[in-house]
Image (cartoon, one colour):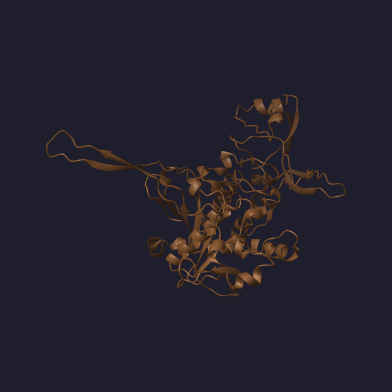
Length: 432
């Protein structure tokens, strides 16, 4: 952390006097480990704070959370012993770091409560979700409970080692010695419970620095550097597993860089799970807030206006379990031309993802095409978007055989589409 603060301009721009979130937890650095904390309404104050990224587990079993009923009580004090273990560890760590404030979502955003009027919690949720970009980008350090599956799992673990005593050799001066062995650390983020939670993706991408607490070691990741205690892991993994969003005031990312970052982010995010599918776009709104002013563009159901034709080229990832979308409600939650409408991992073709200039889109000439999402709710207007481009009608056999001899990939959205015959008529819209 000291090295990052001293040497990484891209990790520290604008963090000297960061505005505090709407509410923070005042941990009181002069307090003892078991002393109470309190919720502080900041009213525009600036300061240094840590954030916590964690798995909730069952929300109904969370012993301590901010609600309309507990708000005034928590502003006076929250007993340390009433906090779940992960929160206790985060408070202890924050105090040890000499930092005054800590942000935890369930203690800083008003949560709904069974049997209570949800108007205040709904209003607060809408307001605070719109500030996630600022909350995590301005954080001094994000503490990530990487391998805990719930708020009771904790941050801190005892390293499990095996003591192996070795007898001395036959030589007269040989002495017995001891070595210590431990289980090999798992460095792939896909092995960590936290990284399977959808909301965590933007928390990780936006934070300038993240300290990941696993059950075998600590892992450090900032915009400039990554390392771990065993020194053997993160550097050898796929680069998108440890991607952080660039600091725009320092590096001035281009449109192409931002577009590819979006594709990388959505590819990582679409693998993760959400408790409520209705949150699928809300859980990426922090990334949208980050990119909107840089792209000078609008995000339309998960697709960007300035690269809309290319964004339409999303497809099921090769490892995705492709199936017809099945939701808990009979209607589509999102337009069917959006990646958000399917419950599996998505990606973009290599020609869009690889590091050479993206084509300028949209194409001005051609046919007007309207993509219509046939919403199943009676009396509700369908989601439509109209674009202009070159439209070619062909059969699947013509597409697959391609008389020009170029290799053509045909990606169906669902497994049962793969059995469509060569005589199936398709409409091909040129995207670039």
